Image 1 (tube, rainbow, N blue to C red):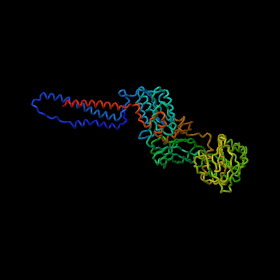
Image 2 (image 1 turned 60 degrees about the horizontal axis):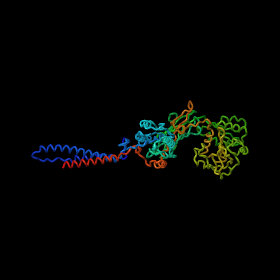
Image 3 (image 1 turned 30 degrees about the horizontal axis):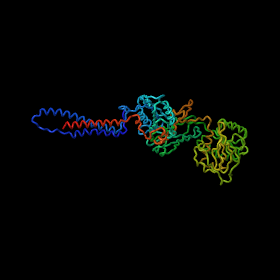
Image 4 (image 1 turned 30 degrees about the vertical axis):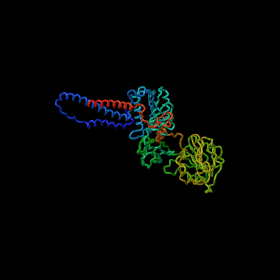
Length: 640
């Protein structure tokens, strides 16, 4: 009914007691004067006293009322009643855009930003008159109308407002604005107002635009400071086999004050690990867990972080992981020094404790190539030449989703390798450098950080490795299935990939033993070889087991979704850009909306629909002062 722009002035109402206090403090007793015969005088005195008492009581009330009305006027009261016919009569079209993306679940002062927005929106709804029309659009990634058309039914609007809950989706403000502009086009009312209730995250409002003829009023619900913990991801090896120890890396982000949050990992609803993490404010960190899966299959789990946090929904990250049989790898070599040349590869892939790789080594006899069928990855280590039968067998392996890793060395036939075979990602040309001159070496200076085999490495990971010799290679840069993944400091390629059918081929232009480089002696040799083999072994039927709640999945909730009975699941997770909590300042939002006549301040959400009646109260004060003056002057003359 009523609200006030300057509510502190209401304390002035206490001053209404001043006339009453003055009345009691200045009350005087009448003096007694004795006369001889006072019968008629007594009758006159009683009449006079009665009239004076009534006037004094009326003056007291007038003075109290004058003070109360004056203080109320200073408080600038607002009302939606159209008091004394002074309210606006022009019909208005009002749309309330209310952000219900999951960042609005941030708790500030004991309540969520979403609930605060709904309370402010209710004030707007309560101020709608019978000639106005309104609608509510709740929005996240996509907007949704509450009604197909406009309405002035306050009860229906308030019911929708109270029933709607937060979503698990991210924000896309311009989508909501476009829908609102489209709806305004159906209205014939000249006055159009658009209220936007949001925290105005930068990720969701970067492309915000205005529209002519529509007054856009942003209502900010941003917290004064941000404190949030987020699980940003869970990382597993590219290939996981059962009964081998698997490294699970949990990534965390801290934008609050909590310095030692606790992270716990659950698998099939059972906690398998928990640890405290030293994570400073405004930083990212990692928690590493180890687990041995008992059997193959699809496992469901989640990671949860606990600590001082005002946005809880992003504290949990779900994952599904497929555990397979141990990886079958075949190592082929036909060199007389095969034992020496195979030594470091065998040590890297097979000797590690709990290795998921089952490695078989064969000296190529060039006869029955059916032995290649059961292997997921085949390594051709310095094989001298590849005849047609071997090539056909390798291509069949690739077409069925297998992977091939080829290394070059002194044993290869450059004529055979530089032919027109579709197997090779590039054609070796000639040898560069000499293993005899170790003082002259080359370094790996470039690699594709986004490629799966290099994701775990930093820009300086290979700076200490020295390559004394390698083959130059001619790469078909126009082939979309071929690309260079790593190169030397002279611009020559080191690792080249080619996709063939369902499979993949990786060509290393140098050897993987210690004859041509000291790379096998460096700490990154083992993880690179593992990453390469795991990448090549990824089967064609390996499903993407994680989906982000965006696009067609924006209405889903975080958790798991069953793809196929009995146990084929994928994990559903939040679009984490919504967790960043970087807000647009009010002045920047208003600049974006400048063309639409937006308010440049953090407005009072009730100031437009409720009229201010302070001027009416001041007029009443003036009228009462005139009456008070007349009565007091009349009584003074009467007393005389």
